Image 1 (cartoon, rainbow, N blue to C red):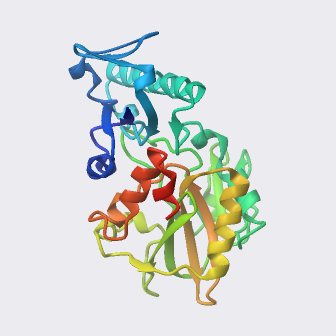
Image 2 (tube, one colour):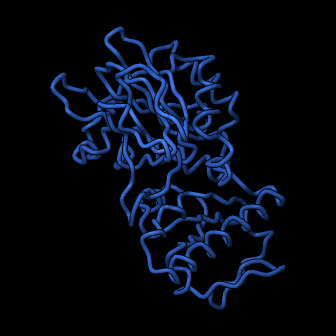
Length: 302
């Protein structure tokens, strides 16, 4: 029996995960499939001369094959990568029917858009005021921030990050705007959730900070830049209830913490990156995710 890992060569999490699987792993890289020679038919998957029958696959894990930013590629290359991504989605549909799909559904990115997340999260957390508009200006009182509504590049491989909107009247109404009230935060927080287990990390936000999106501070992605903490009991209980309501087994949740301290919910990424938080597996994140992807329940819930 083996596990199929759907990923891409650029996904460092997949590289770090490989040693933590207990079964043989058939790794399919979206951007490298043509080098392996793969055939898919009613019998199973053929890689080179090897046939992998459907009944020999015990689990399929959708890690992050969609990470390559295809819009930045020449037209034919972009078309080909989108064809392969559709190939992976079709394979995931087969895996669901066969009962071997595990942990991350590729459709979760579309099934749980930010407005739905925020509406559901408001039952359990403080949530900044928000609005999604097109054809009109902002109605939220300042200060506000703008965010990308869809995870697609603006131009080439350039992405829209969270930005402080100093002059809301200057927002061009012919564009779609996803806006939120700015939170006077002292810390950014992110929580990895995997089938009931949680790992929380915080990053102090200096009063003099001129950024509102910590992803812009690349050094914060280094191991140890975010401090591991114990979750407050009330936040942990709220996360459990929220993830049960939204129906996710895995996710990375982002929060802001004010000086109250109050935890403000921002979003949950149903397939969020986690490798840079625990690259040495010292906190056991990789072990837990690998066990969950292979459906080794006794290890996941330990």
